[in-house]
Image 1: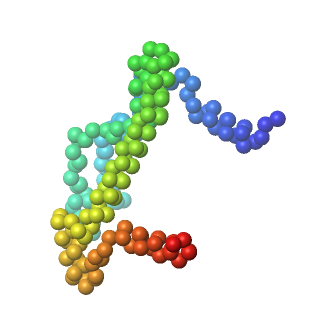
Image 2: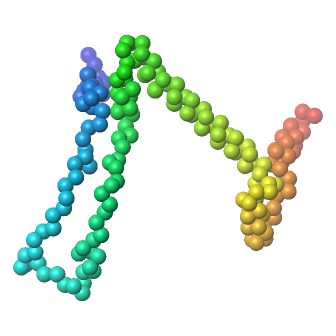
Image 3: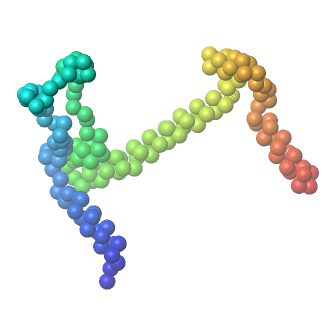
Amino acid sequence: MSSAPIDIASAIQSTSVKRHPSPHHDLNPSTAASSKQPVEPASPTSSVRSNADSIPESALKPIPRRANLPPLPDMRFEQSYLASLQGAESYWRIAWITGRDQVVLPLVQGMLWTLLLSGWRYWNRGAQFQGASLGSKVRRWWWDVNHWKIPEEKVSEKVGEFYTAQIGAGGLD
C-alpha cells in the first residue's frame, strides 16, 4: 500500500526520463528556430487601405535584419552530459564522467567563486577610503561634496572596543 504523492511523483518521473537516450539523436533536438522561413507580404486587398499620413514608411518597409547570426546554443546540462558520455567505453568511465560533471566541477567552481568574493571583500574593505585608486578619490570627493564626515577609524577597532566594553560590563575583568 503506497501513498498518492509517491505514486504521482513516480508517474511524473517515469514519463519524463528517457531510458535509452541516443547521443546522435538527442544531442540537440530541433526547435522552432532551427528552420528559417521567409515572411511573405500579404497581397493588398481593396478592403484594406493604408493612410500614408498615419503609418510611417519605416513600419511599412522595415530594414531587413542581418542573416548571418548563428542559432542560439542549447545550454541544457543533458546535452553536454550526453556528448561527454559518447566516448565512454566502460561503466567506470561513465561513473568517472558523472562524478566529474556532478560533484567535482561544481565543487571546484563554487570554491573558486567563494575565494574570489572573499578576497574582493577583504581588499575592498581596506581600500574604501584609505586607497589611492580612482574609486577612492571619487568616493572621498562625493562625501566631501555632500558634507558627509569621512570615517577616520577602521571598523575592526570599533568591534574590538565593543567587545571589550561588553566583556568588561559582564564582570569578567
